[in-house]
Image 1 (cartoon, rainbow, N blue to C red):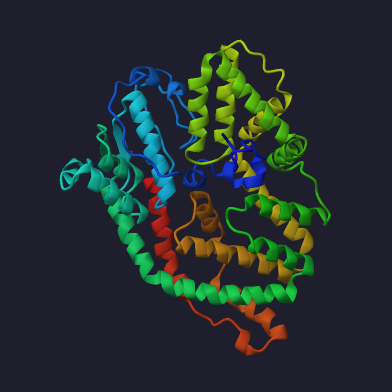
Image 2 (cartoon, rainbow, N blue to C red):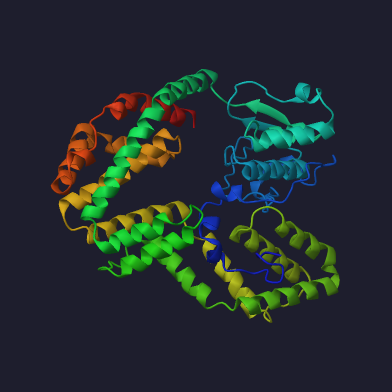
Length: 454
């Protein structure tokens, strides 16, 4: 079943937050999962590795644990499967372990390339310290604490012939560690100073932002990171209250709005009933075991539109194999089309468009130069905080690098104080400090090495 409640397996994908779809290659892998059974009996692969190398689309990907982002067929007889994981996240790492387990079992793949080393790091000698029962308990605890990754958990808790090979340039990795250590020495003072600056910027917003914008920021700031649908809707609702420029320059947002319109026209209760009818019909024509496996897989791992689409596609394929017509299930077909529309969204482009759309909204609402500079400084300091908290993506680092020359620390400190002192006393002024300037070189060096390692 593919829903939040057992009696209602089909759900509105948007109702759980578009983040479930948008971040399916990274944050989606960190969805809550059931307690995993790490055991796996050894058996012959059911898909020869040679066939997978010739045609990567034959790789049997367990959709309950991972999602396929891209396929590329090479010409040198080599196969690389790149798994983008959620670092130090228990459920994300456990999902990765389960995905590896499934793929190893189906194909016989043995080598897993890992970061952090340039040599073989298989844990065969470590496993000898304790029996398998003890390792299942200990490895689970270490995974919870972020001490090991999913592939190491799999290595410690199964008898699979897994081989862990480091893929780092060790000198570069060591340099990155040293750079990180030097950055950490300065980080606490920088973050403390950024907190002071952020409080002053909040004061400036209260002094210079219109009420509608303050209401917007209050609503958005009250939402959790996983409430993407809600924050998106808040943005669109407030933007429509201004001189809305339309969506011609935002094609992916236009697609998302169309998907929302499609969603509003789907009878989900009828689609649920039709799925139950299709399942019952498939069972009566000899596909009881196949249907059971499909529905059981949907109970494991993350609940996402990818999983829903995979389950529904599998049921439809079974119906085709059985010679059953699916025309009696119009609502289920509409739901399938709805999920397919999600899969066609260009996620990276969509997120960029949402950022640009929000910027355009701010520019329309903020009409004077000072309030616009407050907005720009607010964005820049948020970017700085993410950088020193080591949470920047490669695109965000490039944004920081490009904008750095335009943000002279003394100048923006002076600007904040000039605006504050129009209405407040010197006690509300931001103190002049150079902790950020002194930390820039090491910060940039750290992220530059990260980019080289990538």
